[in-house]
Length: 266
Length: 202
Image (cartoon, rainbow over all chains, first blue to last red; front, side, top):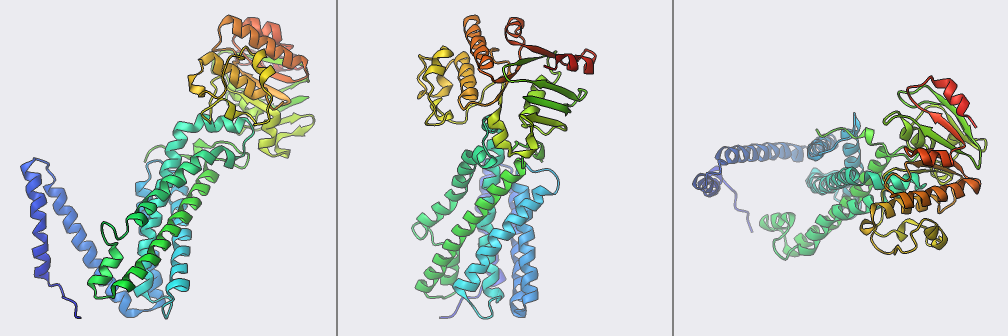
């Protein structure tokens, strides 16, 4: 079976789909035409760029280039995490907490998936490492950002109740326990949903990609199963790390609420 | 014995005073002068320079949660972390006599706290503060939300705590209550400082 190669004129034909959205925008006066055009142009430029970069990195198959690419992906994910946060920690911590948690959770989950589960030779083969890292990062990013959102929002509402628990002699883990529980539940919901509907409504992206690329469907399903386990684990690891780090930052070693470490909205 | 040594509250000169068991120190002063902040600092709920000793042990020498089990701050506006009143007490806590003493014998603790009246909630908060027998009670306006009869009941309750050997530091705008309970007074703000603080020392 040979793959059908897409030419640039094929891309133009696909771009005709945008006419539908453009027409809707004009007909209903949504004024989304410009935004739509910019988003589409960005998407094309970003994907084309990443295509060329990946082609280069894959061709090198060198640990150095692969590591460089992985670090770049981490930094971009860290920045995206920062952008999504509505309430931030003061000073270096906003960026530091997100990046450290991402590095820890996504790094660990990716290494386990690559080195222990998939085990390609060499283990740092970019063809496996980079796509796995990308998917794991996206999942971890979502869960960490949900945890931080829930904790900072909840703190705003529940600072009185948490303060009352401290006054009654609770430790910081006891005082924050209800908030942590809610944050972890919120952060786990998306991966639970993805797992429960996987293959029912749509084929997950990686599996679709492999099938289009001509892989055996059973083999593609196996990869997808591995990935979904990895994504769930990474999300959980990221969530618990972010929740505990958040509690450590928002209280001190004398078990006091430290709202002063929370910056105003950014 | 509760001993405060050079405790720094923003906007006030460093404070030093002592309160012995069975004594009640009333903190007086205009709104915003730092009365609540002083109580919170004694409970180690906010960072503050200086020393606070209970029976010769400085607060930094023991874990903060343990300190707050012995030195209990009761906020003017009570907050609740669980839906029902009962969930705020240890399962083994015997509350019947305390409930009766505070005029809360008719209150069903399994009901949501939010359904209680403001006055009932304030009395329940006082009950929560004393139920696990702290050595020191730091009471911030304990009767601010109460009608006269219930305020008298609560004053009587606090008097009973003092007679039982507890150390009480009381912030109140109720002159009658202060006259009835205080064994010493401390005036914050607007008056020559160190002299007042010393004369208030028990």
